[in-house]
Length: 408
Ligand code: FAD
Image 1 (tube, rainbow, N blue to C red):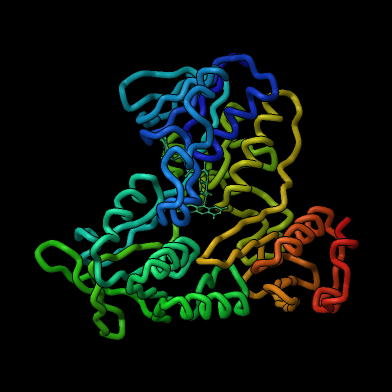
Image 2: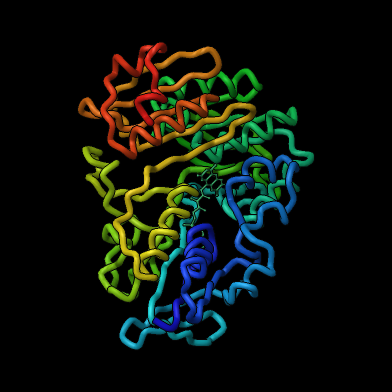
């Protein structure tokens, strides 16, 4: 294999490139990214970077010299516009062609647009890229009423940063609780209380029907029940859609993500896919409503899939089997999740002195653990899930039960 081309210079694409070199791949390695910046971390965009606690340099996954030292040709500001699988080349936005022996798709996701009138007004924003974060940092200055649409991780992190600065912020959510798709009712309730204590207001069960403008700028937001809330900055955080069109147009299978097998290969053996854009088989998804194939949006998944694929391409194939884990910093609270919970999974609260954990069970088996300011529970949970150790709901609920001992 002489030439590997990676489409998407985000967390997963960067990791695949770095791990390929680390594993001794000596051929030509090209990382094509449509963003202008060097590969960077997104999580701080809604946390430390937004709060002004780190600068753009602090976001970079590696400094510029890393790429030349490791002979990784990073083509920034360049989009891959088409894949020719027969001739094994990709077409670039500058009209060039790039030949590959193996192609890695790491195209990530994009934010779901709010499908209502007024969504294109000035003052309606989203948060995905460093450009979005820069625009938001500027926009926050001087606004009077911030409305966040969507009480998911990013919306809540953003709301927490605004509230900490004493800004007026209201979160509108169509569901009845925060982070409803991802966490238990117990964790939702605790985070709602944390945010309310910090001054965030919530409106639940409230769909947005329109954003009303004045002079081309957002001025108010209207909800299904006819309420109109003043809003001179609207931040939309209602989930993402996978960037799968490139794969689909090349005839690869897609279904809410690029379909890959346990080795992260697409239906074409010369094309693999990793990160937020893929749907893959996972034992951790067994028994979930959508079946045992999942698409996961997390740094852990992007990094571990990048490593797993690099190992296969350099002669050490192994099925991808990493325990999913995730974190979200909301104000002073740290939420860590290990495993994958389905909305109907049972919850068992493990109260402790500082923070708490909610252990989730599906068909009697541990499916996930949500820990709030309990890093030791989180680490134990990752080990328990990796080894598929059996833990009963009674053991989980007993604060005297030694989780760490079971996990080791
Ligand atoms: P991305 O990082 O999105 O990278 C994909 C890249 O591909 C993008 O740069 C895109 O522009 C580029 N691209 C797409 N199509 C093309 C094309 N045709 N040609 C060239 N380039 C293309 N995860 C956590 O685990 N914890 C957190 O606290 C957390 N916080 C987050 C906060 C924010 C604000 C955001 C946006 C995400 C957060 N995440 C968090 C999620 C995490 O950042 C993602 O899961 C991770 O970045 C996924 O990596 P990826 O490489 O698959 O996709």
